[in-house]
Image 1 (cartoon, rainbow, N blue to C red):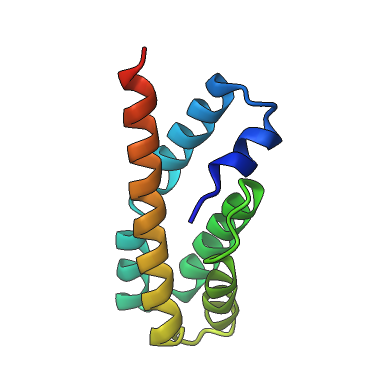
Image 2 (tube, rainbow, N blue to C red):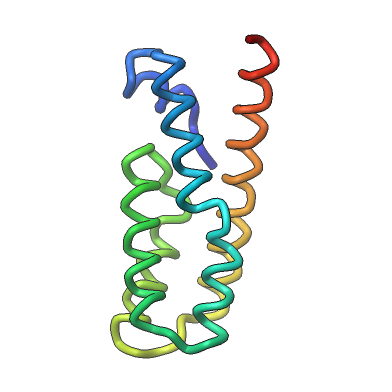
Length: 114
């Protein structure tokens, strides 16, 4: 889960930067759960490696650490042209869905005050 206090501290409480950061995350990764599922089902390990690596890095930048280890496990398996463990996939997809919901809720609440 995202810690918005950490994010705010990283950007000196600049609400405009936070809004752009979160909106950009949704644009780039709003379909990440579906994309991971599709890549696994199609056994596209190279693309899964690239996608999980990119997603992991983006989440680390905004201070999210609970799902990054699972993404690293997925990335490592995909780099070895192997299917990731179901436990890693299910945990990652659940966390990513929660993060997306958290971001959407934050953006909706902030836009309500404008």
